[in-house]
Amino acid sequence: DTAVSQTPKYLVTQMGNDKSIKCEQNLGHDTMYWYKQDSKKFLKIMFSYNNKELIINETVPNRFSPKSPDKAHLNLHINSLELGDSAVYFCASSQPFQSGNTIYFGEGSWLTVV
Amino acid sequence: SQQGEEDPQALSIQEGENATMNCSYKTSINNLQWYRQNSGRGLVHLILIRSNEREKHSGRLRVTLDTSKKSSSLLITASRAADTASYFCATDEGGSYIPTFGRGTSLIVHP
Image (cartoon, rainbow over all chains, first blue to last red; front, side, top):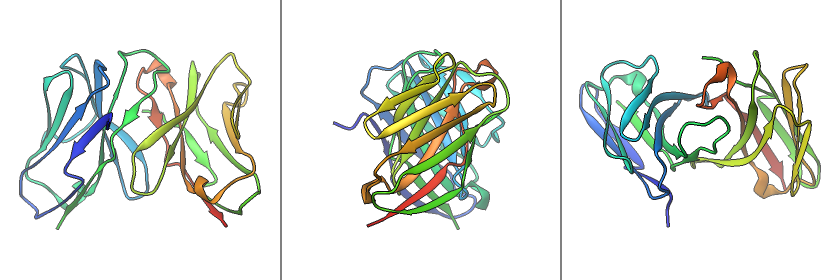
């Protein structure tokens, strides 16, 4: 069984469109994350939710809006897509906030904006 | 936010050789983790080392931590073609509970 699953795996869309990436984890974790990996492989935290509440919101354009309907799901909605949004987006989860917790990653969603 | 910096950015070796990757960070940490990312996949946790530990082993992996130099190294012994992947270190610099990652070291092991 996949621990952290995200869909779609690949997404090609035009500038200006709105798109969503869904994420679900079956590990029973309280904390979920969205990371962005750019073309140079830098992996940067975007959002973190703990028990459906937003804990961390790094400097991310407000076109990006996370939604957590329950603690097993954290979806990412992106409005008015721009070319620079092209990247790989990773959903992840972990036990509640504690230094040293292992982060469990999904397989990534490859977003290409044309 | 701070992030670990891996070095070298790319490493190419022959099967059977050892591979060493380094990670440097800027401020104090409580722990440091190493992750692996196969091409087209998500990151997978390999090993965690705490600030009061100097060395840790897991199978063919050996991790060292030198807090005085603010650096860590990951050694993969007797490498295999299947070890080809990117390797990332993640630290909890600044007391953050969320590990911050660098850009990784891309390792290619030639059969």
